[in-house]
Length: 421
Ligand SMILES: *Cc1c(COP(=O)(O)O)cnc(C)c1O
Image (cartoon, rainbow, N blue to C red):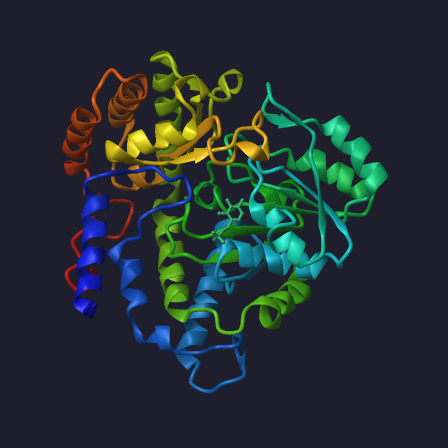
């Protein structure tokens, strides 16, 4: 195979996405202003250490970029300290575990079926630090942590760190309540804002640091407008231990081309984040309401379905998450099967749920009327009332009207980048 074939495949991928409805809740699309940075010379360089205290020469311009990224991040999240070096959300979480726990400690987090991320668990970052994870008792009806039961476990087991924030995240997190318990046993609270970072930056979600979280981590590419990397925010007194845990702890070089892209995305968030985040949440609620009206089992009904970019549907009556996600893919709707709190880990292959996010469709300019159309297509495919072919045509038609990137300095085509693929 010659290298040109790879370009063809990349282009095929891009066309596929141009014709589809991308609804994976952990993804988004970056503007050309962010993407320009990826291809720059920065992608070939090293900048270990901190701004002004590098180990290699040649970092004068990089220092300026990283200083701006730090300043913008502190401003967006009203944080005393920001570290912008983690190359991903898992790496950011690993750094926090390295900073705030010792091997053999316990932490408390959500189980994976209740939305927890693998990095909070033994199989990933927490396990690498030698931590064992206790799970919050969870109430399936109210879709929230049982605080009294959590307190009982915590007083007995004395976890060192409480992790809030999840991958299936429909509602605000009980930061104040968990902080009270943490204070009783001298533990700390970490808020993993990977999914909701853009909603927090847009001031349409809770403010975890104000509510008592000691540390907040988050991927910069889910609801936020950035390339794939992550940030850590904390109070001033934790700044040194967090910085040391990032470098030399878990990164050496930290991908300077995406750092520059991140700085640009933070500027977009500062200007457009509020309008965007408001529309994201309105869109998610509209999508959930319409799916519910049509007769699907949308999760979280008694709490209004969602306060984020996400919507979850229990499709166990329709063959389960695996089959439904595949059928929707055939119609050009890209989302994922998902465990729900009433599933066990054994159901991972065919869980009861599907999870979808509207952040990327919102970035492409979709609003409530499009959410209604999408709900009708999804319902049609799941119920078998519309063929996948017909649904696919409706998807293509709808998508062809929404192929520019909004909430950026200058709206531009989303899929036409001759020089980039
Ligand atoms: C996505 C996610 C992560 C991991 O982020 P990556 O950037 O993919 O490493 C961590 N925590 C939560 C809650 C997530 O949803």
